[in-house]
Amino acid sequence: MFPTLLISHFYNEEYLLPWFCRHHRELFNHAVFLNHESTDSSIEIINREWPGAEVRQSELKEFDFARTDQEVMAVEEEFEGWKFNLNLTEFLLAPRFPDLLEELELEDVGTFAYKTTVMVDNEPDI
Image (cartoon, rainbow, N blue to C red; front, side, top):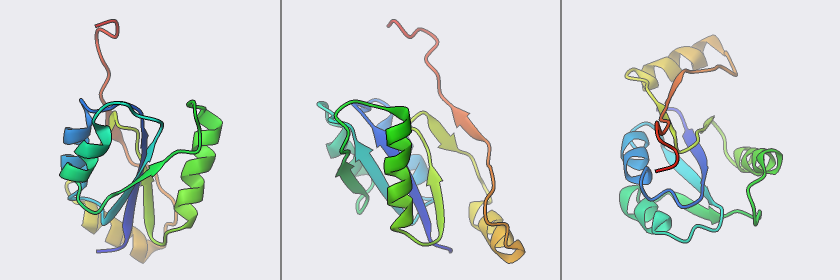
């Protein structure tokens, strides 16, 4: 399997993290999670559900879209291979994921887009 990296940033995501980690740990060789000052059990969940994943403290005290993108891109530059950036609400659905990457490698595609499923709360006030 080709080197695959998942990068995600989070803040107090203890509800979704167990499902997110269990789903994606089978698809990726490695993961880097950027923590935005979580005060819940998010870090413990990542350590339990995805042994070997890195949890890094974000340098940002408050979420900022553009600066978070820059932080993610800096992590991308540290690694070789395929890199995927997913929010905790995005789940990569790819039953033939290793085969797909092999095909893309052979065709020397470089960059591609893949459809994700986004989980959205129907009742955001609850």
